[in-house]
Amino acid sequence: MVKTYPDKLQIIIKNLISNAYRYTDRGHIRISWGKGDRGFYIIVEDTGRGMDEKELSKIFNRFYRGKESPGRGIGLSIVSELVDILNGKIDVRSSPGKGTVFTVEFESS
Ligand SMILES: Nc1ncnc2c1ncn2[C@@H]1O[C@H](COP(=O)(O)OP(=O)(O)OP(=O)(O)O)[C@@H](O)[C@H]1O
Ligand SMILES: [Mg+2]
Image 1: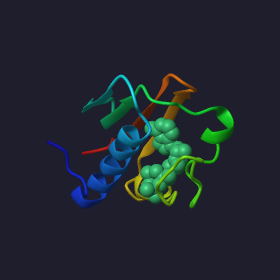
Image 2 (image 1 turned 120 degrees about the vertical axis):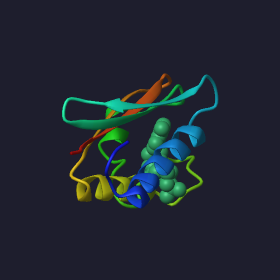
Image 3 (image 1 turned 90 degrees about the horizontal axis):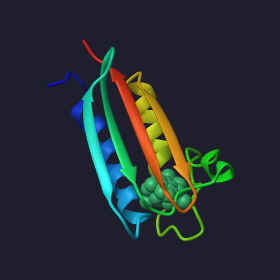
């Protein structure tokens, strides 16, 4: 059980999962969560197309979207704003052609 703003957390998780689903055409998506040193974390992993460094540097910009994206390129900019509001941290690791791991961490009392 964690104390947080459920509506904000839900938007964050929903965006990460829908991206994982959208940009993964083989393998799996894994969602895990747990207690960290000072709070809690959520990890959304996929084995999808992955991203290179150049793309990674842009994904949190509003309206940035990949060439094949059917979306508007706003999901991750909202995620990053909400993570900030909740005083959290977001980390992303990715390998082109292999997959992506997003980790969000929050402090909680
Ligand atoms: N899990 C992922 N694997 C590969 N690429 C990703 C992943 N998540 C995001 N991206 C890349 O980052 C871009 C920005 O993501 P973001 O969620 O902000 O926008 P979107 O998914 O294109 O559109 P929207 O979320 O507004 O529907 C995507 O267009 C895609 O190129
Ligand atoms: Mg999205």
